[in-house]
Length: 521
Image 1: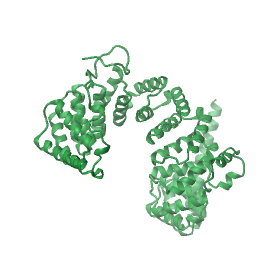
Image 2 (image 1 turned 180 degrees about the vertical axis):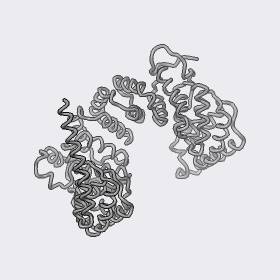
Image 3 (image 1 turned 90 degrees about the vertical axis):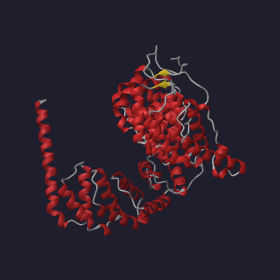
Image 4 (image 1 turned 45 degrees about the vertical axis):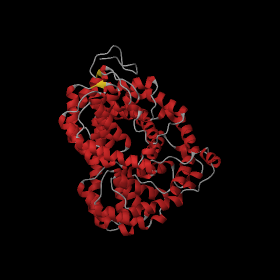
């Protein structure tokens, strides 16, 4: 063992010496290097996963900048790939020059080069110019094969990955996944023609997609609000996912659920069941964000997870309680309320302790969602937590939307709690400022809340609500639905009808949580 350790030490020292010598040689020859030599040097450092000293990087950048107008597409793509691989952001001047150069010659670039440049810029958090994105869209459209009937696509996708069609297609599975990821990060939704060809092409490549690519594909679709045009693509996605499901990373499975919820689409039953069972077996690998995202996704779909998965996720949440951030806390509370699951005493204590400790980071939406969840589950938060939520609500009142205001009023009324005076005044001011944005449901919810509490409605706010409702009533009389959403709105929703008995959120309960009838206080 001692001999092996000594040999490894010598190898490491020799490697470090060789890298140092390479840096010295680069600096010594920098003035003799042309554009391709400079790109090759950057490529070499990136391949050995070594980021040179700032002096070397500055020298390489400066030298490359002298040749940007003469770089080939391959050289520009290689340079950008190297910068991204080393997580080195070049100067704005150099990025602008490469952006302009690649835009100019985009119609001559190979698919891999065009995609690598876009991918690298996004990886470096450098926004590509509008001209570059439009040129890339046009180039990608031309490189992708025309849309074929679904039957023909299935024939292509069943071919061996080793056959020559892969090179003919131009855009590999990895390149397609990288491009979709880049588009999603940029929130750039390409034109319909490009999307149609990309869907068709992805469908033909799905047999080569690895689990990470499949998860990223769905994540990209969801982030862009891109609901696939082709039903055959979803069927092919299901088939490929089921064939490699045991190789998925935990985060990949969570991303699949998140994507379906973001697209408001319940995945194929067989696929959803398989993904749930697989995640249940891997839940011990979830981090706090994974747990929050998974439970939130099921709540968005109004679909309770299978019992083994729900138990495993909640158990993992309990283990990671101290790592729950404000957004996760409010999302989990909201999710439990949507799923009609009453947290156990232990789970409630975690929410209470973490919310109290991190209250300064709660957003307006987190404050409103937390209060709504407690009210929906008929759980009265502790006085300390209520006061902290109200105090944070005052601080973030400028970010409260009309819907958030309405359901915050509703929450206090449902819990039969008067909002602390500073928060009540802040909400009234904000309601007056945003009354022109209130819809009929929000107006009705406010009136219901004040009626239930029995006081608190100022004359000024009452008159403002009356004027707002007059607009909706006149709209209804005059048959002008374009002016307001009243025709498509249920003024009093089921959520604000009827009463539920209240229990304290820190009340001891026999047994665990669940969806059982709540006991009276």
